[in-house]
Length: 126
Image 1: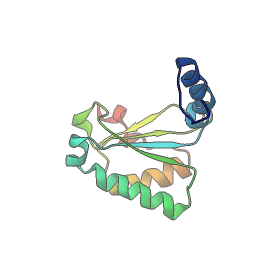
Image 2: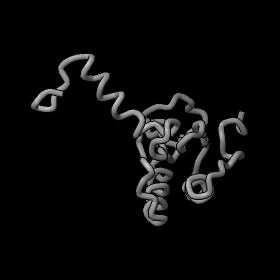
Image 3: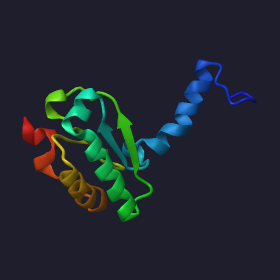
Image 4: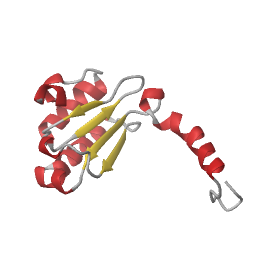
């Protein structure tokens, strides 16, 4: 970046990516990340309540290192609300048809305990 913090070339952008990605990518050892789909279909299916339940439970459990992220369409509208969980050195887990109650259990069992809840995953619903 230049003296004003601006990225002025593709090489500068690549350097920022190479420096930042390892800290953000759980599969590379970065912070745990929870992504909640909050596009129109997700919101209509109750995703805001799921997001709020996760946020409250993370705070209650003191899980300050977990990145809770809002995103738009995840692309599987028939399975909304959708929550993706990525933990360091593990593959992403996609939870579907989530509820606030299921979200609290996911925080306790998956984020704290390290065990995905198979019956909530997309693989169990197909």
